[in-house]
Length: 248
Image (cartoon, rainbow, N blue to C red):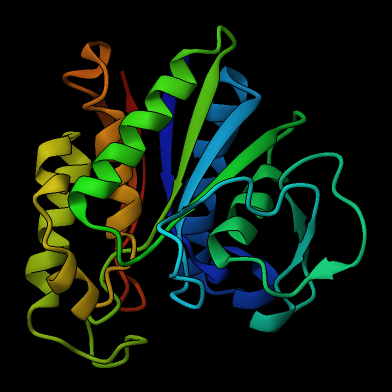
């Protein structure tokens, strides 16, 4: 049964070895770490949802990503290793999706043994496809009598300032405002109304994961009006980051 969904950024800067002593990074890291620790006290079985890097966009939906594997942030500048379950072994897999690396790193920030069943949705999936994926996930979550947690790993627009990774796009502020409002209000329909093409053009790749979240919370009468709390919502490096929790 779904207990709650925690929303965190898909950002390498969460890892201290990659961000140094940046105060901005420390702030979002603290918020994300606290949120997953709360989730770990509610459920030790998690389903993770993130978005692919478009390098493997032939599949709309992949399940069991990173299962039994060791991941590494070496491609981002430091060989910090992560895993999504206690049985992971072998040499690090350099091609593991960033969202899976972040989920594994956050898993390691908890004080209990967590297993994460990681799902990756294509950045090209339509809003309806994301909704359907979310509704399927909700059936899976609620079919298990054990407490189940949901971890959504996603970023907002990456073109909010001139120094942002995607440079500046004047449309980005409006898109990010709509995302922030929907996540803060716990409004699944507002998330489903996000335009995939516009989101993609301003670098809001997390759109697909958030629309899966919307499907999870429109796939059960128990979640008609999710209760949302916000721990962090800002764009310190020109990228929209959100940490929060949705509860049925």
